[in-house]
Image (cartoon, rainbow, N blue to C red; front, side):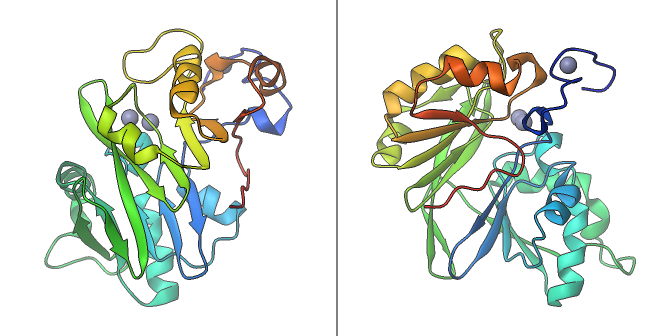
Length: 238
Ligand SMILES: [Zn+2]
Ligand SMILES: [Zn+2]
Ligand SMILES: [Zn+2]
């Protein structure tokens, strides 16, 4: 956090350096990213992601879309538009915030984006089946995504019965756990641990962690074996 001198912000542990939340998914066929936050470029460079087939959006808050302009690198590399998947509201917001990418007479070099509106129904990219996981982020509907037995839910503080149903059998769950204090629109640490019990995935990783959650090495001791704190650069294989 800019201007913060707390023990997390001053920590030298690389696991306490928390860029904005995103995940890259590599299957045999496809390279996908969920959300392009302000740190997208840095994350793609760090992980050497040299090919990207599509971006899925959970919602349009700035910390999840601000880095979208940088997909233009993939436009150049792949000589194609970047397909974006999101609900209508999220895509409308992207059109407002990146208006210059949707003008008829585009300035050369602006990102080339192709919008694919999705709703709560499962959809496919090429052959890959993706199941949306509708959740609530205070009043804002947000989508998590399930791909095979991997499920990703960020920016939520409520999960409906229908979504619990869609989470059944998931082996790896990524779930937001913002901080220790109660929050208006995110599960805090305690609430996220309750969700872990309810959902019962063999392994859950907490993400969207702020500096108010404390240091990785301290929190790690407070969580059951089935839970781990995600950190920047973590790779999980399924
Ligand atoms: Zn801090
Ligand atoms: Zn949000
Ligand atoms: Zn967020």
